[in-house]
Length: 630
Image (cartoon, rainbow, N blue to C red; front, side, top):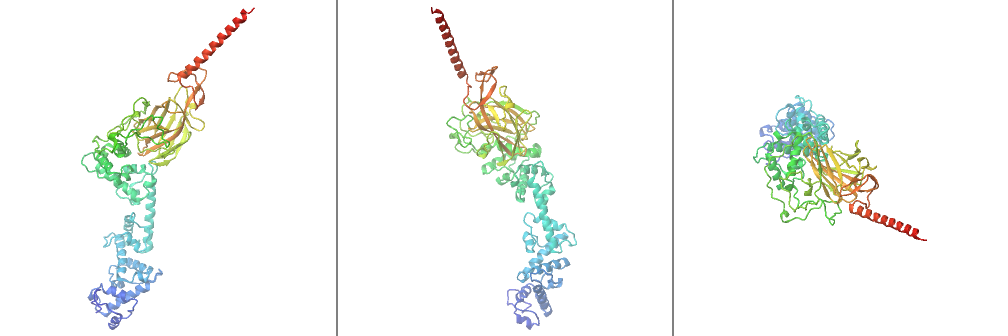
């Protein structure tokens, strides 16, 4: 009866064992002994000696499994064989199994299946250590089952590799303490590597292939590492502080490289999640993904790009597809009407016409992705807002439009850029604020040798602001608190560096949004431009806003509080002030109502001259009458 028991027929009772001459079977271990008998062949349990060895072996398990970890489990390889665990056949395996039983309570090991599960983990660890294939693959659950902590899905492969790197004689894994030490080291190494990755900003220690490996990130090699690091540096720390985020970036970059091989073969299958992992979070609809994939399909990163320009190429495509990615209903009014002054500082949009009632169909052009053209001379130009041009009709910018829009269009080059009071601070004169990809950054304010204001952001972008006017020298252009003062109707010099080569810088002045214009950077990411401040901008406190792309491909916005002023003139050498006005050098600054119009000056002069003439005539007549008196 005992030898033929297979778990499905009549279960042997305690008296059956007694009748067979087997001792030590009680209500405590009966079920445990039967769980072993159900698995062994009849030939291995058809004698009293064989059955007794099973009972004795399980009795040792009961004694050892007291939960005290006191070395009381003393089973041998023969005992484990009697318990249907033939795989526990070496000193290392026996040692580990006894340690596991010793740490357990009897309820945790009171069936053969529970013992077998532990034996499988031990067998897999030893097989991994000696470099042989294991019948059971080590999983996170495997390590948890034997009490090893710190192992998760992101470092499981690292743990397996660390065990495989131990001595082949298994001396490095024959105790639970040694295995736990390996796990602890794996976690520490991973955290250190992830710290390097998450803190990389393009100027500090760059992650190497081994860094990614230690972090548990797969797929990085010598061919793609530089490009991956370039994208990595453009992200915020919060976007790359987990293995999952970094792995998603690597996977997306590999997909991008595979499809951007210069062949129009429709093999780009990036998803919105892929573009988000690369930092392009504005790509979030099926239409936008399809448009981007079509453009990336014809790009050739292997020929046309270096790691430093990959982000710029993708960003440029996004700008060319801006009508698809962020369709706008109409233009921005460069010079708003007096009745249109939004209190929140938001850029107003014109009322949409019939052609702008829905987003355009996604049919991106097949023009090649623009290649950066090298130049060494900074671009210098003067941008004058076309105030007489009528407002354009409400139409969406065409997909193939050049990102360098004219200022008369009234469109922001970067529609996703924040505006003062809406995504970025509206600083008072003398104060500044900065935002990179929606995240506030510090901006330092200084002055150069020409007393121009220098705004340096943490993103590496530097803007310099100054006034170049014979009637208002830069030495007096900045007040003691660092505020820039700009003459109404005159010009302001803007220069910059630390920007993406051949990208666009867009400049606005608020409260009422007024587009000063935009300029393209040179091959070194620098520019110099002179903007004219329209006379429609009223005297008072305003906010100058500059948008550009930094060297890591991140949209950088800086706002600076400025003062727009008129000038009151007194006697002196006349100088031309424009608008037909002649006056002397300024001696007083005022933000009140000033004599700045030629008709007003003419009228005042006429009145004063007429009064002087009357006084002279009256004096002559008075003296004549006095002389005629007797």
